[in-house]
Amino acid sequence: MKVLLYNIRPEGQDYVDEWMKNHPEDELVTTPDDLTLETVDMAKGHGYDAVSMQQVPDVVEEEIYKRLIDYGIHHIALRTVGFDILNMDYIKKYHFLVTHTPAYSPRAVAENTLASTMYLLRHYGKILGNERKCDFVRVSEEMSDEIYHKTVGIIGVGRIGSAVAELFHALGATVIGNDLITNAANDAFLEYTDFDTVVREADILTLHTPLEPYMVGMIGAEQFKMMKDTAFIVNQARGPLIDTQALVAALKNHEIAGAAIDVFAEETGLFMKRFDNESQLPQFYRELSAMDNVIITPHSAFYTKTSVRNMVMHSMTDVKRVTEGKEPVYKLNY
Ligand code: COI
Image (cartoon, rainbow, N blue to C red; front, top):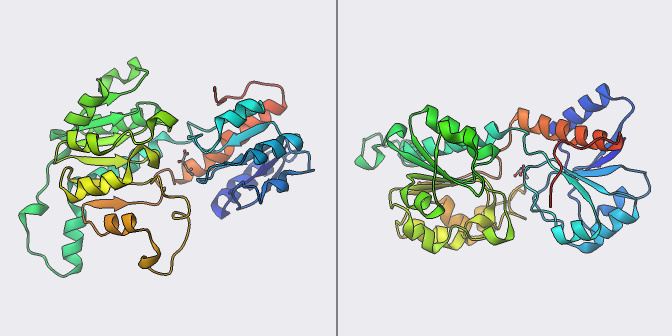
């Protein structure tokens, strides 16, 4: 098979090389670039069976989809869980096969959710801030709760949400969750309930849904008002699920106690870039990053060795299966 892989950085290249060593008959061509109107022509004229990518910027222009079809490419092999970068109208119109990699490592995001939660719960922002100022006097705002006294509310209990439930359940927390589909295998770890109850009762509210158009702004001013003022919100799923301005306002007004944010609606052009100084960053970002009850990570919750390896291995396995006339393992149904 022959595949063009966009967004391959050095750490991903190691796994591409590993694949080619084990499959010398395959040709995997890589570029660090995103798939855009400027770069789509890299896919022209080489007889590729598929293009593969793992990027944050949306593939917006219809022309990109049209050209891929013109170049004989009908398979888009995402190396991500999320598929919201694609325009599903064009995917349907041009009859693309889309595969993704939902199982590359649910634990990677779940463990990051746990780490972020514990950071917030133990007031590390405040404690480390004082420590940097050589101020070691213990103050009551640094006093913590313990996780097994807390209720963790999970919105979206798929592979990642389930892994989150299992981890927090193991620590003795009460876990509640909401999803359109319930899975009996999760009954050991959580109790399913309605969306509003999860928002209201959670001490830690954590989002693990995909991004569908109707979910944009799922957590906005109204939901922040419903949340406990002692609660933390964690978003390691997709930025647009939270209304960023409402988040800033809720934190300023002490409607919630803190936030761990790995994804922003506004992250394209921000994350994966280097800036000379803080003044170049958007206002909302500067406000949030100045708060000691907020942690921001640059869409890195997924970023473990297991994830990066499996992103390549799972997506290439599916391209190979398709070229051999087999059903892919992770076909997107749309
Ligand atoms: C995903 O797998 O959906 C991610 O968010 C990872 C990122 C590299 C786009």
